Every structure is written in structure tokens, then in C-alpha cells.
Amino acid sequence: LQTTSDSIRSHDADHEKYADVNWDELEFGVVPTDYMYTMKCSKGDEFSQGHLTPYGNIELSPSAGVLNYGQGLFEGLKANRTEDGRFLLFRPEENALRMKMGAERMCMPSPSPQQFLDAVKQTVLANKCWVPPTGKGTLYLRPLLIGSGSVLGLGPAPEYTFLIFASPVGSYHKGRAALNLYVEDKFHRATPGGTGGVKSITNYSPVYLAQKQARAKGFSDVLFLDSLTGKNIEEITACNIFILKGNVISTPTIHGTVLPGITRKSIIDIARDFGYQVEERVIPVEELLEADEAFCTGTAVVVTPIGAVTYQDKRVEYKTGKGTLSQKLYETITGIQTGRLEDKKGWTMEI
Ligand code: COI
Image 1: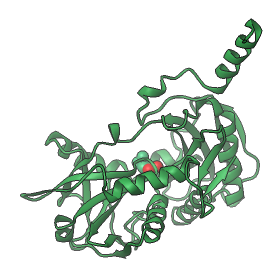
Image 2: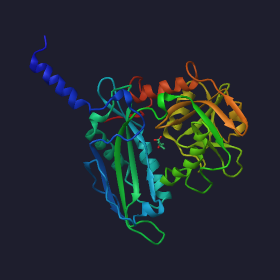
Image 3: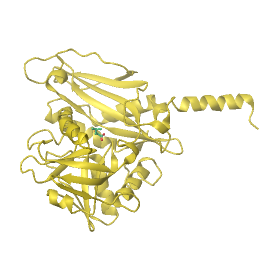
Image 4: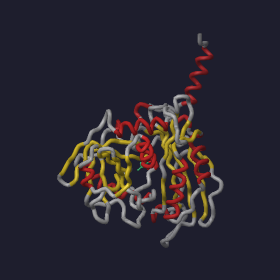
């Protein structure tokens, strides 16, 4: 029999465990949490001591490098709550390395992988009660690396800020609805020699116009073609793409214009374990139109099915839902991420 004081205690414990959020209504958007992490460094120095502060606005000079010349990178990773109350990150060291690689391209100092991981862990632990119940969503972590110092002549900023904020999120596309994609043949996302292969903040807002025009025609998102020939598929606005034909799964190769997605890399491994042949190669858009199935991958989208694609005047539809490869891949990767399936590859990191 539960006594009054027991029931008060268990109520308090629950209050501590979860923030006041309607977990069933979570979307992919900003829900302010309690703390963020900040670490600063001058040009030519190394990052040293970071700290947690209450989540809130940051002060930046109007002449900050990031505001004027877009010197900035971001990352995205998720913390999951397991059924038995543990917190798991998924391959966070891969995000740390990708940020380091991007920082070299953008002439910025970067936190060491160890500093990156420590900062991520501290941010999750400080915002534990914002990690959704298992199956209701995840805590999305957004590391930023920005040129925060003041600069006017074109060149790297004199000071850098590494920052992580967190937000509980639900699925990126509401209800994981299958995408109705428009294949964009006028605008491009990346060019050879550019920054398409790193997570520069400058890669993202240039897709808005294509996305806006496609959405006005009823499409859910845009798939970009390579800018040299305009014949091969490359990347969707916020994720990588895969196609299935027979027993062969193909995805555009990483050669500087496609982001090396961590979910992409993991899905390639899982699909090979399932017995599929996986090819990273140049994929002409005609092959997409003839595929048996198509889907996209990314931290935010996880694995989302593509229901239809329109290229010029041709529209094709694909199988979605039960029994599809994308469904099986989704169940497997989210199973590993949430601790429901055994993590045989050592991809998860418990905090
Ligand atoms: C992610 O999947 O985490 C990304 O960084 C994509 C972003 C545009 C939401």
C-alpha cells in the first residue's frame, strides 16, 4: 500500500525526471531548455575551458565574422533515453571529427574531439529532464562553431565561439510521412571545390528559394542535381539519398559536394549486414526514376521514405510502409539508438 509521503515522493521524482512538455505533440522545432555550453578561443590559440550557462541569447558584435562573412559550422546529434532510464548518444565522435574537418576548410580553430564529447555530455546531463520518454522523441543537440570576433576586411575572425544548445524534438517530417520530392534542375546546392562536403552554415539558407517554390507546387522537399552536368542526383536540402534496385542499394559518392552523413555511413553498414550490395557512386537521375524504392537519411530525418519524385514532366511513385527496406533500416537504427536492440558495433555512448 502506498502511503501519502510515498506518493508525494514519487510525484516529485517524476517531476525531476521530466520537464513540463506535452511529449505527444513534439515536432522538429526549438523548445528552449535549461542550459547551453560555451567555450571561446582567440585566433591562433586552442580552445581550453568551457562552461554551462542558462540557455539564452548571446552577445555578438555587429562586425562578428559569422554575421558578415558566414564563417560558421554546425553539427547535429541526438541523445536518447532508454526504457531503463539510461542516456545514449549515437556516434558523437563522428560529429567531433566532422566539425574538425569543416573547421580546417573554414579556417577556424576547433575543439578537440575530447572537448567536443565532454561538452556534449555536460549539455545532455544539465538538460536531462528535456530528454523525451523513449519512443516520443529525442534531445537534439546543436553544436555551433562561429567566428565571433570582430572583422571588416575579408579574413578569419580574431575570436571563435563553440556553443551547444539542446532542444527536444519529434520527427522532422510530421508523422514520418513519405516525401513527395521535386528534382531541382535550376538551382544547385554545391559546386566542386566549394563547401558542400562540410557542415558550413552557408550551405543551408541558399536552398530556401528552391524549397519555397517546390512547396508552393505541393512538393514536400527538393532533391538537388550535381552542378557540373546537371544529370546526377546529389543531396536533398537536409539529408542524403539512397535508392534500391533489386539487391543493390546505391547512394551518391562523397567527393566534396555531398555531406558525409553519419546516418548515411551507419545505414551503409547496416544494409551490408542485411546482405545487400551497397554502392557509393555517381547516380544518373534516370536511375532514381527506375528504382524500386528510395529513401533519405540524416540525423534529423533518421530514415524517411520517399513516396514520389517528379523530374521535369515525369512523376514516379515508390513503395512505402510495411515490408519496405527503409522501414527495416529505420527500425534497426532507432533500435540501436534507443538501446532496444543490441549495439554490436559499439556505436552508442552511454552518458
Ligand atoms: C541534421 O540532420 O541534424 C541536420 O543537420 C540537418 C538540419 C538542416 C536539420
